Image 1 (cartoon, rainbow, N blue to C red):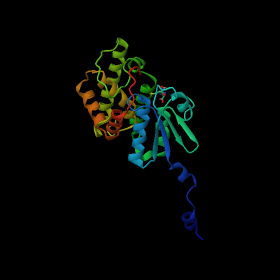
Image 2: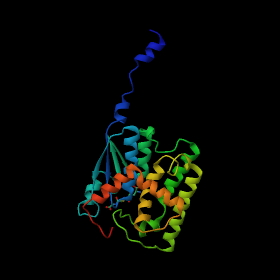
Image 3: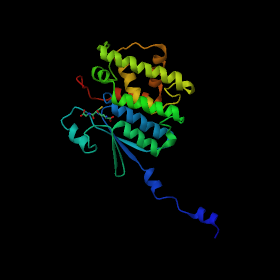
Image 4: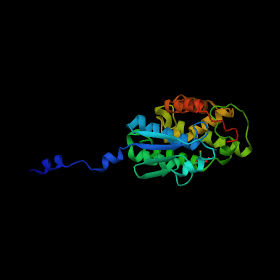
Length: 237
Ligand SMILES: N[C@@H](CCC(=O)N[C@@H](CS)C(=O)NCC(=O)O)C(=O)O
């Protein structure tokens, strides 16, 4: 037998089937849970772009049994968490990276190294910052309740808009999203677009066009529709 024949008959690595196996994404209310939304949109990109199977468990927040239910899936006591075989991945950004490793064809990060570096930087900035914006303008997709926010909140909004403009100008030529085609960076900023809409924050032309592209994006539109259909009303959330 030649070396070439030996190569052809080598069995596929056993790990392949495990890697492609179904996953479960544990999330909170679609109307309120911004971190769930980020992971949910990334999971949808993996589904649509690379055929991933991702089921969903939704745990309503702010209920007496919420904490115990989340802890059954997520050691941090927070959602989202992604379950895959014996692997537990909590935290939205870790979930994005896990999905990206398993499903590179989903295009969660831009192909170009420079664009990818910036996409990761702005996603990390979103993940770790914007405290005033996040605390004063909590996500409530269904509602419209205009308000201005504190100076710190305004400064956060100014920085978000600068990120959006810089990404659109520097990397967005190939489409309507921050890096042209949809990426994980859009998943990270999608809840911010929802907050800015809920609280009636005025945007310049570039940011308003980007926000419109996000709301028209099928995974986001589906998430918003599901949020609107949810029965839970948590006015203090
Ligand atoms: N850094 C975490 C934050 C997760 C987080 O704060 N999740 C909130 C919901 S958006 C949560 O689980 N809260 C628990 C609760 O409300 O009981 C991530 O990126 O996933």
